[in-house]
Length: 153
Image 1 (cartoon, rainbow, N blue to C red):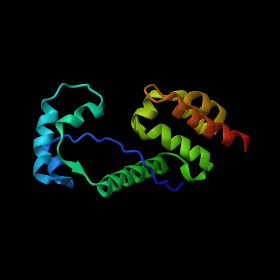
Image 2 (image 1 turned 30 degrees about the vertical axis):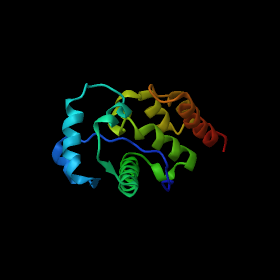
Image 3 (image 1 turned 180 degrees about the horizontal axis):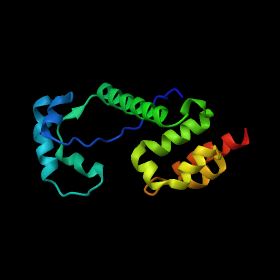
Image 4 (image 1 turned 90 degrees about the vertical axis):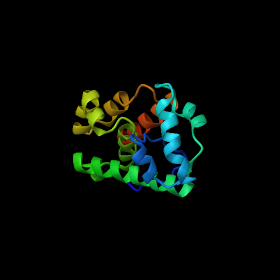
């Protein structure tokens, strides 16, 4: 599987102000102040609600670099855990999509039927079990369609 260019932006938690200072924000002197303002804000809002607390921004190039690193990290994890490269490309895309947000550990803990179907290469059961809460219906449908495509080939 070759990661495809993505135009969406994934939001990242920046756990400490030291981490904020290490990222290529512009203007850099605002990054730590932004972190402090966000940390003081109400907890539990959607990521977009915290934008009003921020003056510094990452460049598009920095965001793309972070996304590329995220993608390759997840692909390496999938290759270490599964016979990932031996699966049909639609399965690779679907499993990557399923694993990307919750992370591999959570995927393994919370999706036992999905895991069992992967081990059996039962793509139709994977299609039925790949739905995730908090993910759009369209995205879940697309992921299931990739598994069904693999089952038909």
